[in-house]
Image (cartoon, rainbow over all chains, first blue to last red; front, side, top):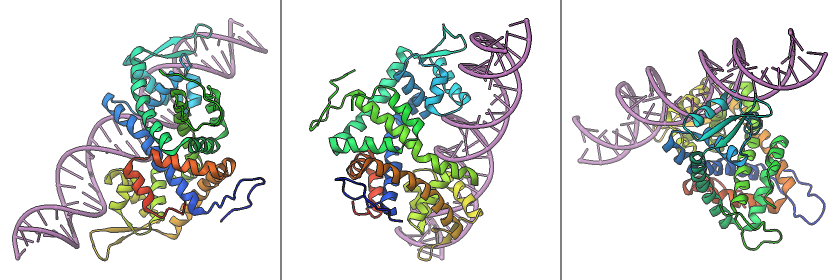
Length: 168
Length: 168
DNA sequence: TTGGAAAGTCAACAAGGCTGACATAAAATC
DNA sequence: GATTTTATGTCAGCCTTGTTGACTTTCCAA
């Protein structure tokens, strides 16, 4: 299975053995677990789950987004998202406002309470990410980002790049 | 929160703005979705889920592993794992053999049929990983692996390193 | 003005986590 | 040899978060 044929130019060869690829696959598995571990612990205290975290994260990122837009980002059914939004609205973390241009749409905002939880969650997650970035160094970080982007589906990659690229 | 100084150029310092860290967080989210997308599609055809995939993967990786060992790797309860194993054994993908040294233990093996599904799943996943590695280049791959390792919990990192490191 | 499409809600079901209780067999210890 | 611990399996029941189906409200275009 070893593929080879190094591309043109200065890059050294990529010997992609099945074994190396397997290690990459397992690295993703274990790293993702670490990545979600801290927020998961926090969420438990509030009786929320990962679905709530995702909604909170992306509403924070794009205040005033519509439900439909959020569906596109999260890739779940509207019924599934709705259940999560309902509890967040009930608990006063999210504010849903009828659209003025199109009154079918609901625009979503985090309340002060919602922002507070967002901060708590993202600070925990950033802490781990920051530590990993520091440990690995700037060059590794650039590579990390490149591989992750290349691993996304094209649609996801568009979504990902849509909102400010932070000047990489 | 600290916004900042969009650091262009050749960094030797790490300017870890919240914005850069947020991009890293979202990259993990979208990339993991891509990472699981292909196996998910295959599993659907067999009426299995990700839980089955994980079991199959780690039994393949460590043929003859015990149930208890698998529990440690997967980080789920035995009831949860048992439900999955039961169906895999019933469907003839996994073989469970009483231990010879310690007859309380069950050693798990993939049957030929199990190996076939493992191959189908992991080939799809490797295909994507290989494409991402190629697109990003060898240096990026090394960085990718470094950051992922640094992001794991120490226990997970041990698990990860336990089985042959493929000579990185 | 009316019919279709789009946005959102409610209801019910399934997968796969979880806890708790309990059974069995084998190993380890007293 | 009796007791305790360990490894595994099973039943029952709960929760989260996916799913599909049916429905309402709103908008728009024919």
